[in-house]
Image (cartoon, rainbow, N blue to C red):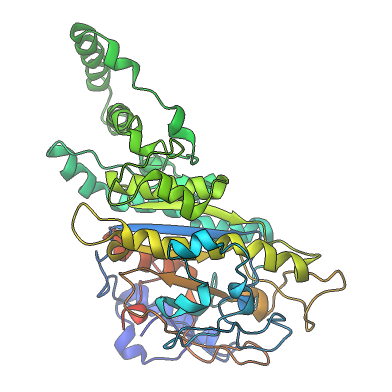
Length: 465
């Protein structure tokens, strides 16, 4: 079982002084809340190290989740109704907007792209993910909601993707010792996901966009004679070795990072990463031309195409912003149009990842998780839409619950809805998961050492049942 608003036996859960103090706070909170969320002791799950890659989307601006991923609720939460043509074996309410498929041309249908409802049994949904399960109301503020999404906390100093890179540091070092360079996690969206200071600064992910590497050339070091390269390296080492013990690790990390960047330059110059070159030569089982046909050629599409190529070189995770869903007006007409880009992405990933052959065997689908979240959900405060035919964000359940979808081969609970909400008021009828615990679960699946992060939260097993 996962993190839930549920009373449990303290004799089983609490031990030691720290757990005792947590328990005191738990008892006090129980008098104010009808359900109770208690962190668990376990810090690893059955899904540990079962995935090699993560594609993580932020549906930016605050996404109205019940319209898509928790659709079987009252019209005030989902005015678009339910989709038709839903695949058998799907437990969650597939919102009508996921069936919007004007994008699905004859050419794309020939390539195998299906409507999202028809592949819904390959998507698992957690209907009740919340930034702060013990808070009395939702955080509907753009600034603080986004900080929670990027770092887990308001004012957080370490981004989720910095945590991923830090958590995989030993794997990267072991590969480097054998002469193999593994690319780090990469951001193709808001740089807040890559915050990091102190010990974490050297693990901040690079920020890229889909067409960056089409213009990338080789490192200038490659044109230096051997004697010049040796002289530069020895100067750096002498500078490092003169530092006192306090500064030595930071300088050494910088030098290692710079050496890694030189190694990255050879990877970044690869033709396979020039995603706009129109190449018809298969690489990992699919050509750049095919990827362009599947995803299109706008900015988001180019980001997706580059992300899939970076995975070949060991990149564990890519973060992307998609959308612009802060629709305080004209949502009634605008959301069904705007969501179609994301619908095409989900369908395209379902096709491309299954076709792509992973260097470690199997398909990329077998090794990749796709997930999506946002800074918060949205509300019309008791109506289908506000007076401007849009929606807002406040402190209610409609704003609170991120109904997060998960897709990919490492997700064994495909088609399931883990938890639930009452149709009339969106009160949780099952487990509630903290956002931090959800991020730890994704890190767990990637094999990250996340022991330094979110000490009051733990990864959960529910998604692996």
